[in-house]
Amino acid sequence: MRVVRPSQAGFSLVEAMVSLVLLSIVGYFIMASQNKAQKIMFKGTSRDAHTQIVSVVKSKSSKTLQQILTTANTNPAGLATLLNADLNLGEGIGLNWAKPAGNSKIVTMQYLAQPDPVAKAALDACRQSKSYLKAWQGPELPLRLASSQLMFCGQMVMPANPDNNYGSQNMAQAKVGFLALDVSLTKVIDGTSIPLSQFGAGGTLATVTWTLVWSYEKGKDNVQQFRKGIYHIVP
Image (cartoon, rainbow, N blue to C red):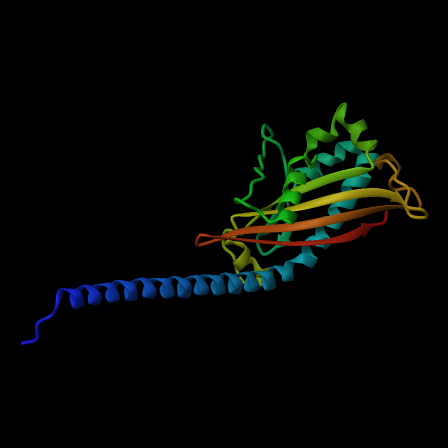
């Protein structure tokens, strides 16, 4: 029978503890690598899905926004129909113009912790937007008509029973989604700023900077996505 010296037994215990620590470290990095790969894959698949609906969002928001800008000048009473209606983006996906607390339809603009800087800027702009009917009535209407820079914002409405069209199945997983529309009104010939009251006359242009944002929570990782671009409205 072999006698194990105390020093040898202690050394074996130290070796076992060191091995356990090393295995834990290796396991941690493997898990972290897997989570990172999963997050990248999720962002990639959601990005592909969202690309399918961006053209729809731009087309339908452009059409409605032109109606809003024109109606503000020609028939302000008609704004109620436009601002209280949701945009139908197809396959159950909608966009609800942001409205402040106190209105019949309340839209709460929110975001996950530590948002992407571009998304955060869009959200801050949304919180200051005037995309609700009361901001276009009474004494507020002349202020809007005198503005050359306007902000509109909408809350994404996710489908209750999504399918694969337009990426709605992927979008339905989003916790938060919104569209910010920053509108600048100018003359076409020289780019001079004009008030909304002059929009619609010959040679006027609305330049719209749009930011479309989604926010997910994949496990403990926040996954934020956005698209940003410009389109023009010529009355």
